[in-house]
Image 1 (cartoon, rainbow, N blue to C red):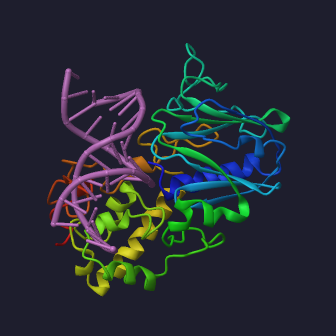
Image 2: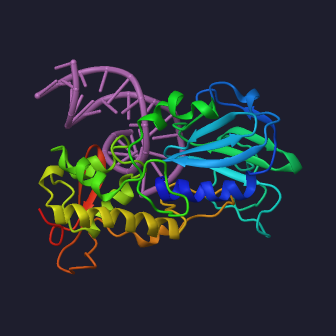
Length: 303
DNA sequence: TGATATGTTATCTT
DNA sequence: CAAGATAACATATC
């Protein structure tokens, strides 16, 4: 799912394809996703791309930013100059040309394409979203943290790229403070964006397995040693996800039309009834916590 | 056919 | 009152 590593992967590609290019026109077909303000983007040149948790910001040289949350099923697809040759287009991409196989490399606006950004030199950036949970907001770049509720409330972020550290890095000290100050279920806490930015269901499941901690534990019950182990585990699974270009379990694809491969390396997520490949003594169980699928090994994850 | 999946938010409950 | 738990959102897929 689009969590920190997936959105970071998208960010890197948008940097490559968009920075230095001018947005000439924006076509909005779904006001539910893109409420207003697209005219403020037209004629602006892309300065830089930033990521805050699972949110992206495309900053223009005219003082405006397009802030994008793709939620569960949003896709940002780029077609135009500089793509690898031949360009690829995953079958997971929605909204292709009706009647043409989805693997055709010429993405075109379709049923699930709700926004199209037209760029200079013929480039296009499509926003597709089957479920329309995502959103795009136009905000003055200087007001990003003030006006965008989501970014303002975001908790500290795990550092996965030392060259590009987040504004509010999640240090071990901060992590211990967050975990030690509540009785909430540890896995639900990890996914709370106001506590820790960027971790979602897949990486929360995998980090808890890696740290050998039961997802149902009360956060407060973790020993100092377990706190440190979990902190390291979170960084490790996020880095692994990033290394593999994210997890294309559902509809996640990258702007160049490719899929990530972390889904082939899930540690615990989605492994219900499979034998645990660490202890080989039990099969993964599945329960629901905070309304989300939770997978764990009943033998090697400690209560 | 209906249960299920996900991230966030609105709303309800303790 | 505030923290926490749960329903709602929309729709393809199993």
